[in-house]
Image 1: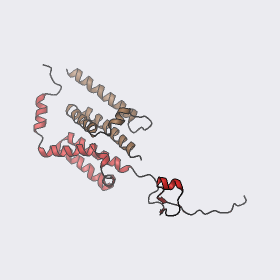
Image 2: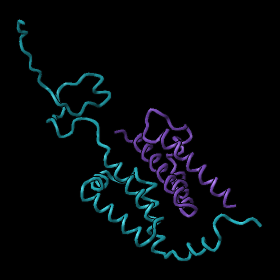
Image 3: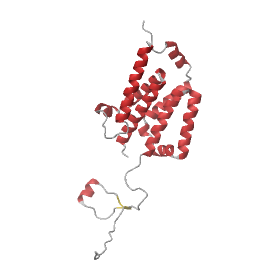
Image 4: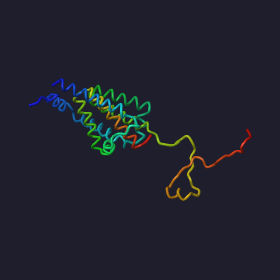
Length: 132
Length: 84
Protein backbone atom coordinates (compact mmCIF):
# COMPACT_ATOMS: atom_id res chain seq x y z
CA UNK A 1 0.00 0.00 0.00
CA UNK A 2 1.34 3.39 -1.00
CA UNK A 3 2.02 5.94 1.69
CA UNK A 4 -0.09 9.12 1.46
CA UNK A 5 1.75 12.48 1.29
CA UNK A 6 -0.28 13.55 4.35
CA UNK A 7 -0.79 10.95 7.08
CA UNK A 8 -4.42 9.80 7.33
CA UNK A 9 -4.34 10.42 11.08
CA UNK A 10 -3.60 14.11 10.48
CA UNK A 11 -6.61 14.46 8.17
CA UNK A 12 -8.83 12.61 10.66
CA UNK A 13 -7.60 14.79 13.50
CA UNK A 14 -8.21 17.94 11.43
CA UNK A 15 -11.80 16.94 10.69
CA UNK A 16 -12.67 15.77 14.20
CA UNK A 17 -11.13 18.87 15.81
CA UNK A 18 -13.49 21.05 13.78
CA UNK A 19 -16.61 22.02 15.72
CA UNK A 20 -20.01 22.37 14.00
CA UNK A 21 -19.91 26.14 14.49
CA UNK A 22 -16.58 26.28 12.67
CA UNK A 23 -18.05 24.24 9.84
CA UNK A 24 -21.01 26.63 9.60
CA UNK A 25 -18.59 29.56 9.59
CA UNK A 26 -16.57 27.86 6.86
CA UNK A 27 -19.71 27.18 4.82
CA UNK A 28 -20.73 30.85 5.09
CA UNK A 29 -17.26 31.87 3.92
CA UNK A 30 -17.48 29.49 0.95
CA UNK A 31 -20.88 30.95 0.03
CA UNK A 32 -19.53 34.53 0.26
CA UNK A 33 -16.64 33.60 -2.04
CA UNK A 34 -18.81 31.70 -4.51
CA UNK A 35 -21.58 34.31 -4.69
CA UNK A 36 -19.42 37.43 -4.23
CA UNK A 37 -20.78 38.90 -7.45
CA UNK A 38 -24.35 38.68 -6.09
CA UNK A 39 -23.68 40.61 -2.86
CA UNK A 40 -25.39 44.04 -2.87
CA UNK A 41 -23.08 46.86 -3.84
CA UNK A 42 -23.62 48.90 -0.65
CA UNK A 43 -22.09 46.10 1.44
CA UNK A 44 -19.10 46.11 -0.88
CA UNK A 45 -18.79 49.87 -0.67
CA UNK A 46 -18.88 49.64 3.12
CA UNK A 47 -16.09 47.03 2.98
CA UNK A 48 -14.13 49.45 0.78
CA UNK A 49 -14.51 52.34 3.29
CA UNK A 50 -11.93 53.08 5.99
CA UNK A 51 -14.05 51.56 8.75
CA UNK A 52 -14.84 48.52 6.61
CA UNK A 53 -11.18 47.91 5.86
CA UNK A 54 -10.23 48.16 9.54
CA UNK A 55 -13.04 45.75 10.49
CA UNK A 56 -12.07 43.39 7.65
CA UNK A 57 -8.42 43.27 8.66
CA UNK A 58 -9.44 42.75 12.31
CA UNK A 59 -11.72 39.87 11.32
CA UNK A 60 -8.92 38.25 9.28
CA UNK A 61 -6.48 38.70 12.18
CA UNK A 62 -8.97 37.37 14.75
CA UNK A 63 -9.88 34.38 12.60
CA UNK A 64 -6.24 33.41 12.10
CA UNK A 65 -5.65 33.58 15.87
CA UNK A 66 -8.79 31.71 16.90
CA UNK A 67 -9.62 29.26 14.10
CA UNK A 68 -6.30 28.83 12.34
CA UNK A 69 -4.75 30.06 9.17
CA UNK A 70 -6.87 27.94 6.77
CA UNK A 71 -9.98 29.77 7.90
CA UNK A 72 -8.00 33.00 7.87
CA UNK A 73 -7.07 32.37 4.25
CA UNK A 74 -10.74 31.92 3.32
CA UNK A 75 -11.73 35.07 5.25
CA UNK A 76 -8.97 37.02 3.50
CA UNK A 77 -10.13 35.77 0.11
CA UNK A 78 -13.75 36.70 0.85
CA UNK A 79 -12.71 40.12 2.16
CA UNK A 80 -10.54 40.83 -0.91
CA UNK A 81 -13.37 39.87 -3.26
CA UNK A 82 -15.71 42.22 -1.38
CA UNK A 83 -13.11 45.00 -1.56
CA UNK A 84 -12.60 44.49 -5.26
CA UNK A 85 -16.36 44.60 -5.86
CA UNK A 86 -16.61 47.87 -3.92
CA UNK A 87 -14.07 49.51 -6.19
CA UNK A 88 -16.27 48.98 -9.22
CA UNK A 89 -18.27 52.10 -10.01
CA UNK A 90 -21.06 52.76 -12.45
CA UNK A 91 -20.26 54.33 -15.77
CA UNK A 92 -21.10 57.98 -16.29
CA UNK A 93 -20.81 61.22 -14.32
CA UNK A 94 -23.03 60.40 -11.37
CA UNK A 95 -23.34 63.19 -8.84
CA UNK A 96 -21.08 65.55 -10.77
CA UNK A 97 -23.72 67.13 -13.03
CA UNK A 98 -27.39 67.91 -12.69
CA UNK A 99 -29.63 65.58 -14.64
CA UNK A 100 -33.07 66.14 -16.10
CA UNK A 101 -35.63 63.61 -17.16
CA UNK A 102 -36.41 63.63 -20.87
CA UNK A 103 -40.07 64.48 -21.28
CA UNK A 104 -40.13 66.35 -24.57
CA UNK A 105 -40.65 65.02 -28.04
CA UNK A 106 -38.48 62.03 -28.82
CA UNK A 107 -36.97 60.75 -31.99
CA UNK A 108 -38.24 57.44 -33.38
CA UNK A 109 -35.06 55.57 -32.35
CA UNK A 110 -35.30 56.98 -28.83
CA UNK A 111 -38.89 55.79 -28.50
CA UNK A 112 -38.01 52.31 -29.75
CA UNK A 113 -34.91 51.89 -27.59
CA UNK A 114 -36.47 53.59 -24.58
CA UNK A 115 -33.49 55.84 -23.93
CA UNK A 116 -32.10 58.21 -22.97
CA UNK A 117 -34.11 58.52 -19.80
CA UNK A 118 -32.04 61.41 -18.48
CA UNK A 119 -29.96 64.12 -20.07
CA UNK A 120 -27.30 66.34 -18.60
CA UNK A 121 -27.40 69.27 -21.01
CA UNK A 122 -30.59 70.56 -22.61
CA UNK A 123 -29.30 74.01 -23.56
CA UNK A 124 -26.51 74.98 -25.92
CA UNK A 125 -24.85 78.36 -25.52
CA UNK A 126 -23.10 79.65 -28.61
CA UNK A 127 -21.06 82.76 -29.12
CA UNK A 128 -20.16 84.65 -32.26
CA UNK A 129 -16.71 83.89 -33.67
CA UNK A 130 -14.20 86.51 -32.70
CA UNK A 131 -11.49 87.84 -35.00
CA UNK A 132 -8.06 86.61 -34.17
CA UNK B 1 8.75 10.12 -1.41
CA UNK B 2 9.64 13.50 0.09
CA UNK B 3 11.69 14.35 -2.97
CA UNK B 4 8.76 13.70 -5.30
CA UNK B 5 6.47 15.68 -2.98
CA UNK B 6 8.77 18.69 -2.92
CA UNK B 7 9.24 18.52 -6.70
CA UNK B 8 5.46 18.45 -7.26
CA UNK B 9 5.02 21.39 -4.88
CA UNK B 10 7.70 23.38 -6.69
CA UNK B 11 6.18 22.61 -10.10
CA UNK B 12 2.70 23.69 -8.94
CA UNK B 13 4.06 26.90 -7.43
CA UNK B 14 5.97 27.75 -10.62
CA UNK B 15 2.94 27.00 -12.85
CA UNK B 16 0.61 29.02 -10.60
CA UNK B 17 3.06 31.95 -10.55
CA UNK B 18 3.24 31.80 -14.35
CA UNK B 19 -0.55 32.03 -14.64
CA UNK B 20 -0.66 34.88 -12.09
CA UNK B 21 1.94 36.90 -13.99
CA UNK B 22 0.53 36.07 -17.42
CA UNK B 23 -3.22 36.42 -16.90
CA UNK B 24 -4.12 38.01 -13.57
CA UNK B 25 -5.58 41.52 -13.83
CA UNK B 26 -4.16 41.70 -17.37
CA UNK B 27 -7.18 42.29 -19.51
CA UNK B 28 -5.10 42.21 -22.68
CA UNK B 29 -4.55 38.48 -22.16
CA UNK B 30 -7.79 36.57 -22.55
CA UNK B 31 -8.59 33.67 -20.25
CA UNK B 32 -9.36 30.35 -21.87
CA UNK B 33 -12.87 30.01 -23.27
CA UNK B 34 -13.69 27.10 -20.95
CA UNK B 35 -12.60 29.08 -17.90
CA UNK B 36 -14.88 31.94 -18.95
CA UNK B 37 -17.83 29.66 -19.70
CA UNK B 38 -17.44 27.69 -16.46
CA UNK B 39 -17.39 30.78 -14.22
CA UNK B 40 -21.17 31.21 -14.42
CA UNK B 41 -21.74 27.83 -12.77
CA UNK B 42 -21.71 27.96 -8.93
CA UNK B 43 -20.43 24.39 -8.63
CA UNK B 44 -17.29 25.43 -10.54
CA UNK B 45 -16.62 28.23 -8.08
CA UNK B 46 -17.24 25.82 -5.17
CA UNK B 47 -14.66 23.47 -6.71
CA UNK B 48 -12.17 26.35 -6.82
CA UNK B 49 -12.71 27.01 -3.10
CA UNK B 50 -12.33 23.30 -2.37
CA UNK B 51 -9.07 23.37 -4.35
CA UNK B 52 -7.82 26.14 -2.05
CA UNK B 53 -8.83 24.17 1.06
CA UNK B 54 -7.21 20.99 -0.25
CA UNK B 55 -3.99 22.83 -1.09
CA UNK B 56 -4.09 24.47 2.37
CA UNK B 57 -4.21 21.04 4.03
CA UNK B 58 -1.38 19.89 1.79
CA UNK B 59 1.10 22.77 1.88
CA UNK B 60 0.86 26.38 3.14
CA UNK B 61 3.05 27.81 0.37
CA UNK B 62 1.05 26.13 -2.38
CA UNK B 63 -2.21 27.25 -0.80
CA UNK B 64 -1.17 30.90 -0.69
CA UNK B 65 -0.19 30.87 -4.37
CA UNK B 66 -3.36 28.98 -5.35
CA UNK B 67 -5.47 31.41 -3.29
CA UNK B 68 -3.83 34.32 -5.13
CA UNK B 69 -4.57 32.67 -8.45
CA UNK B 70 -8.19 31.99 -7.45
CA UNK B 71 -8.67 35.54 -6.21
CA UNK B 72 -7.42 37.05 -9.47
CA UNK B 73 -9.51 34.65 -11.55
CA UNK B 74 -12.71 35.30 -9.57
CA UNK B 75 -12.20 39.07 -9.45
CA UNK B 76 -11.35 39.27 -13.16
CA UNK B 77 -14.43 37.28 -14.10
CA UNK B 78 -16.49 39.43 -11.73
CA UNK B 79 -15.16 42.52 -13.48
CA UNK B 80 -15.99 41.10 -16.89
CA UNK B 81 -19.58 40.56 -15.76
CA UNK B 82 -19.86 44.05 -14.21
CA UNK B 83 -17.40 46.29 -16.09
CA UNK B 84 -15.45 49.07 -14.35
